[in-house]
Image (tube, rainbow, N blue to C red; front, side, top):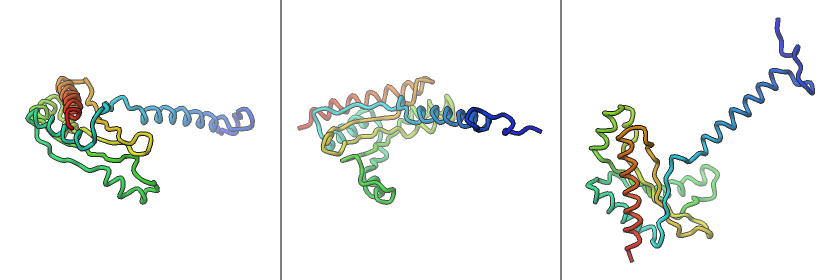
Length: 175
């Protein structure tokens, strides 16, 4: 018969409870650091432009690549609509738009490399403008990096980076 009360740790706490607590704290620290790691998110500020011009520039850059925009999701509308239901004051953004699009050539390459990579489609770039007094008017483009694991993912990464770079250039040219 084996019982945890036979092995007492310091201060009267049972040995297994102390070990379990240590394991939970260690595991939680590992999980928290991985959850908040944003190594896969690429963000670029759009300098010298506004949200509307940056949105038009993003669409223009996508279409200039011969791609079709499949959706422009006004995400900030959802954040504003649901803020009260989830006990939040308001959206931290002035504007948020998620633009989805696809390259059939890249989609085929990704799924031929590994069928599960189809989850990377459609591609998306998020355009957002911060709210609040301190950051109001700061506009950013962001996307989730697909990584560099396969040739298809490398091509997707290069496409997304090219679109973000071109969009920021075009947005500055608007007046």
